[in-house]
Image (cartoon, rainbow, N blue to C red; front, top):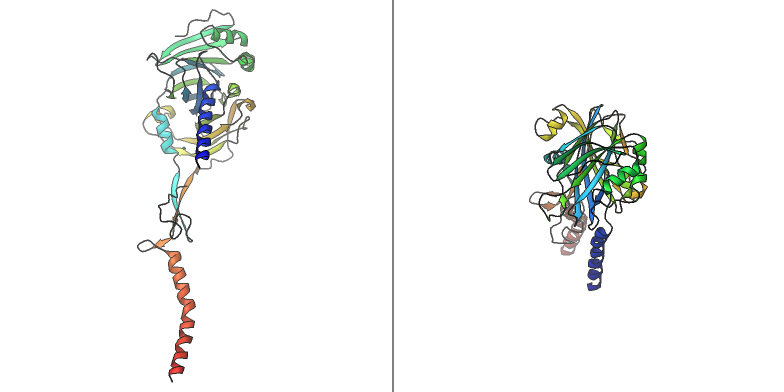
Length: 358
């Protein structure tokens, strides 16, 4: 037993050390890059996407770990973008709206946690960027948003874009220029963000403040291709707000996208209502894992499903079937069966005794 515990502790330690030695240079929406002497890993990316057929808004939040005090990420966008701080309360609202329905499911025969097998209680519950200076890169705008320095960029040359970012103090993956080339060819623009906490010496860890990015797009697209540069598995959660239930066109190299909620919602107040304009929308919650980020081969394009079928997860709590003051039904049934079986034998025995007495 001691050897097993020691082996488990060593495995857990190796996992934690590996997360720091092999940082995730990408996140669910673009390329995350720390400063040259630090390590950062994106544990989870959660985004809210609002699309009305013409305009797309993305509110994104990173959950990161590591020891980096500065980092940056770059996100390609198909059109001219505006950037502002998002309201983190929107994620709490959506988590509540998409919470699973809880039901109790009874079973007849006792299981491992029930008497007479165990007397214990069983839980059956079944979650400041400077200017360009490079002719191949144009700075459309620059904003200081809380702990973020944001630059909106254009680029006609992928190498120029890479050089511009590196000249601002960040070591980037050598593959960045090759990976952004398809976006340069399609004349996309870029949102470059430097995460530099105003509190000096504070590492980037936990949930970062969300950012809200808005741009025009005739199709609902969620940029993912740069995430192929990640060194560790990626996790993506999407809340999609649109006129209909939406689905990704393909898995783009990850596991099959899982729908965890689908249904009409009508937010009346709060940041979610501001995002939807107070209008009824169809909310689709999608979760996807990327065990091998290098297999990501495209951006997520989402389309309307054939039907707006509603869906909510159900979490069952298994409970032993009882009556009265918690008396197991199986015990009463077995007792009644034993009485029924014993009754004929009792009658025969009684008759024999009467005859013997006579």
